[in-house]
Length: 287
Image (cartoon, rainbow, N blue to C red; front, top):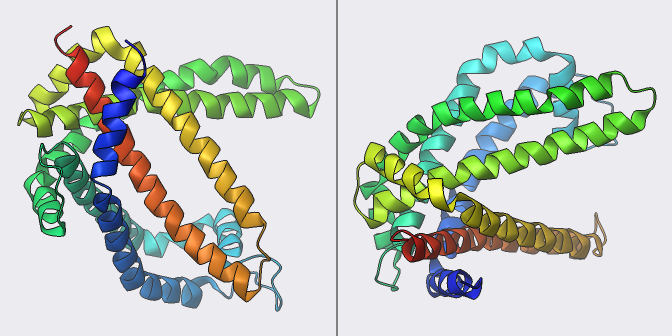
């Protein structure tokens, strides 16, 4: 089968539900506006006195990262806060993903914000459980990664110049991305089966594993091709952004507008991923 067999229905499904991208963007924007002020105030009050010059040459966030790397023990008192922040982020993104998958896989192309929220609530706990069941697979991913990069680590440790170190670092990053996309397919497919076939979490994972046993390479190839397209478009976006003068009103406005547009694009790209994965699954599940 040609790529159009999967790309056309996947793109059409995503574009017909473009409102989902706007709903997710508005939700993230509202949450950011609520959270950014107290978090920024806490960080500045707690850490702004560490190694900051009178006229810093870097943004505050980069100084903060430098402080964390040099004084890792200062994070101790804030461990609870950071863990709470991570937990809230996981819950919020699980809810948004549930709403996104629910509306994307619904046979009804009409999308409303109420239906989006209803699907987020309907599949929320299933998505949380799917994340918990995904943790053992993450352990397997980490073990595979450590085994595969061992020769690269040995090669770079014996290097006499910096080039082997640079090449090995880039190969490690590429390997991590490839492994992550391979395992991410399992999570996506399990969620597609949970939503489209109303299966429980464990049976959905078992069905996903059976499906990937004979269709992994084809679906992974589509996933990587889409990922490459997203990377290219993201690179073009960065180049366009650099054309605007930094520190001036037009540049700031362009950064804000293009930045928010990019968030919508990434959500739409996620919809395209889901649509094409679903189209591939429907075409191949009986094969």
